[in-house]
Amino acid sequence: MKDEEIKFPEGFYWGAATAAHQVEGGQRNDWTEWETSPARMANLERSGLIKKYGKGNFISGLATDHYHLFKEDLRMAKALGHNAARFSLEWSRLEPERGRFDEHEFAHYLGVVRTAKKDGLEPFVTLWHYTLPLWVRDQGGWENRSTIDDFARFVEKVVLILGPEIKFWITINEPEVYAGDAYLAGRKPPQKKNPVAYLRVLRHLAIAHRAAYAVIKQLSPRSLIGIASNQIHFDARSFDPIGKAAAVIADRWWNARFLNRIAHTSDFIGVNHYFHIWTGLWPDRDHYPLSDMNWKLRPASIYPVLMRLKRFGKPIYVTENGLADSKDEHRAWFIRETLNGVHRAIGSGADVRGYLHWALLDNFEWTDGFWPRFGLISVDYETLERKYRPSALAYRDICRGNGITPASKTKG
Ligand code: IFM
Image 1 (cartoon, rainbow, N blue to C red):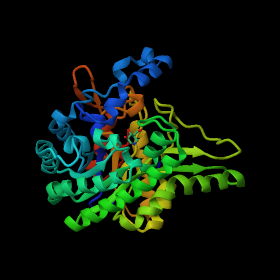
Image 2 (tube, rainbow, N blue to C red):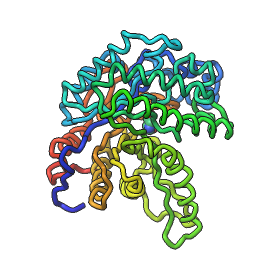
Image 3 (cartoon, protein in one colour):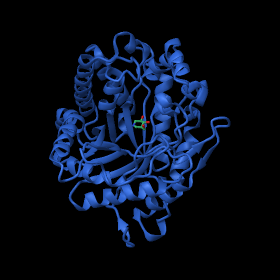
């Protein structure tokens, strides 16, 4: 990398992201019921995973107890020079029974939002990040069309209470991943492997986004609304026409399909970027470090991803990007190189306005449980003690300096 200063546009948002179920603890939703089910436990036992990680690894339980410790966590984010924080609201807490809203829980999230703002963190609030109230699960979750109306009613209530405080709303997190994992791969509840249900759920999620958009715009016209879409960079060698064609098809199917459906009802595009997938007949010649989850670490992929999103002509926010790295060996390098790519994309005309690292702190990584460590802040799950990882401090220098200075370059 060049040794010069790289400055980001004035007002760029710097921060990190979390999701309610992964950090709060004490949930009662479709996931908490599923994770302890005898069938799932037997499966984990059979595959040797309980022996390897222990049963507790797979039960979200108290998570990081962010529900009670959010003030401390937000204070730590502030000390890291962040000026934005992405987090989600837990629908099952706010509407535990159909039409019964829990005022106490609304007050809780109002407290979270106000604390964030007092700490100088602009909230990016996700309305739905994977987990469902039990009554929604019982009516068939997103397969049932009436869940769209229920979601719109929930959003209306949320915006009536939190709306005056919120500028950025993210309606749905990674619809592509959720639908694929839950309805095609059978990895997440309700564990179906049904292409018809998969397409139906995707369609309903797109309609739900549009319905939420209409509700929010009506109640809070000045707020900005988008989704967090999982965007993958598919690639092949330039002389490999079949691999290249496969990359184009994969891109249309995974990256473009959902966004095309909702872009006209989005004020910005939120992008979660983790993967670079090789579609070539000839193997990739480059070698990449691996994360603890064996994900290839290729931060340069952010550039083509952002350049492809330019066509929507909307502001773009990187709403997630990160890696499981318990030893913190690669994170500082990974963030810096990703930001180099973001900066290059801005220089090439992509209107990128913020970067939110996944995650602020270690958390419950869904089916993998607690062992993957995604946090800028480490969490000791015995004591709940939080500590900054060195990469958090390297990122802090970038946030504070609104860019990458030679001084903020630490070894990766
Ligand atoms: O932990 C998840 C998050 O919930 C959604 N995006 C990807 C992250 C890492 O797998």
